[in-house]
Image (cartoon, rainbow, N blue to C red; front, side, top):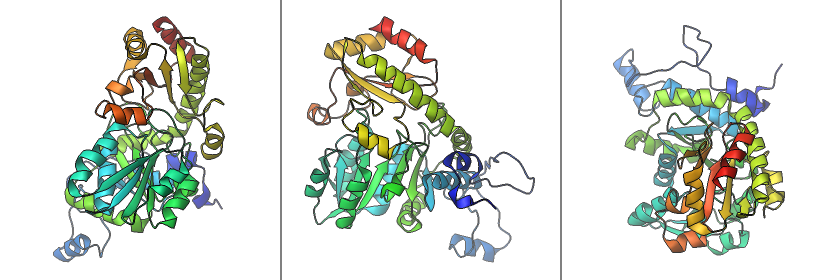
Length: 390
């Protein structure tokens, strides 16, 4: 008999979390309803109090959303997943569920700009403090801990410089201080990296990116153990940053092709990064698959591929970066990533534009930095587009 608990993630991406109705549909059903009917007042009472399983109201219980949660949890090797309306609502939900006034976060200083904005502008209003450290300096994480530290938070690879953090080493530091390690797995997805198996306690996703993979819908997820995720689920149940059933159905379809898409993204990104390194207009290329990457050896151990994001510094700073972005004809000028279509952006004035100049400098985000999310077009055409732009 098959060992269903040890199936490959590519198989889980297609088969896990399939909920069939009495009609026996082969593909996943889409349950577009706001609420669910019960058979009696007693049944309603038992379901609302959690004494009986079942669906009540689509803000916090929906079969299609449940199918997506079960599938993603299986792929990450987790007990449970809580799906949310977007990647940022996933981070908000975990913070609201797990933190209180007076708590402290140790965070990587290399994060998506909106995450830093959430930590500084909003969590700070409620008495949660944050200390930012280099994602690659394990000693700095230990030195930043205070008696109030509850969470460690990092992205690996980071946005936009693709820095790779040592998840196992940082998890050991967090656990020695009774803190939880949260890893944003957006750049790799479970197809390339499973942080929980490396020691992380929680994984967060912007499912909008590679999980959907085609720029169609928004979605987010928090993945971990039942015990850790229960207060996060209770926040979602009350506050309602909920994934819609339609978006959940689209994301289920996205998961089915995640493995083959990520392999293609990695192959094309590696070829593009190698070409960029040879161009005289390019001062530096950031891609974990390159041997020139500072954490190349760690990436080889921790990830099964380099991912689809390539960043590079141009000689000539902002003027050169803007000129290239304006001249490309094939690539899409948008700050989104993880799409079948290649996208190009200037992080210092888009995704990280709300950070102070000092914060951008501390994170290594210069004015000449360009980020490309390599899609599924023929890489020769992408190179030709950049060549004429340069």
